[in-house]
Image 1 (cartoon, rainbow, N blue to C red):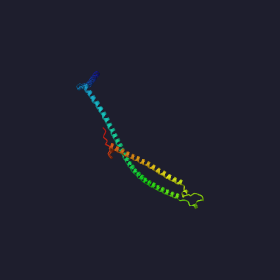
Image 2 (cartoon, rainbow, N blue to C red; image 1 turned 45 degrees about the vertical axis):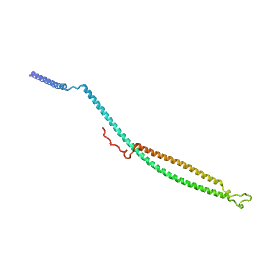
Image 3 (cartoon, rainbow, N blue to C red; image 1 turned 135 degrees about the vertical axis):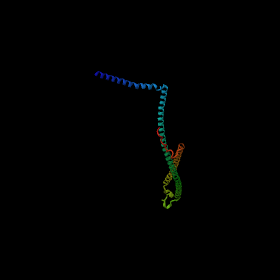
Length: 231
């Protein structure tokens, strides 16, 4: 009895092992059959696929670089637009200041003309006073002192002898010097006005040249384009 049971167990174990070995060998043979039936790829096709893949990667790199360049260009355009707007604002401010300078120049010219007229009137008045002074001194020179008012034996004297002519001459010289100084100031002021006119003219010409070169139009240079989506 014991020997028969051991024999049956040996047969079962042998059958199990043979079944397992047959089960393992069956998938391997199926894989080998599929590999044997799949089409073969030649080396040229693989090389072509590799080159196409490299070109695709290179194209993606170029697209990314182009996107960076486009973003940089857009940012530069925005910066230039801002700078152009600021330059336009400065140009407008300079034109306003130039207009103020022109009005100031006109006021200076009016004041200068008034000063010249007043100076001419003053010179005429001084000439008239000088003529009257000459007439008065001539009258004093011709008017003699009566003998009763002179000591005995004193020579004849006029009223001009009792006047300090040096003081009168000093006043005349001071008046002449003042007139010469005023004339020098007028000449210097003429030169200042001429230089002022030249500066205003140069400023206007510079603004005009800037407007011709940039063709600035208020309200359009500040416009900023819409941002495009990233690639």
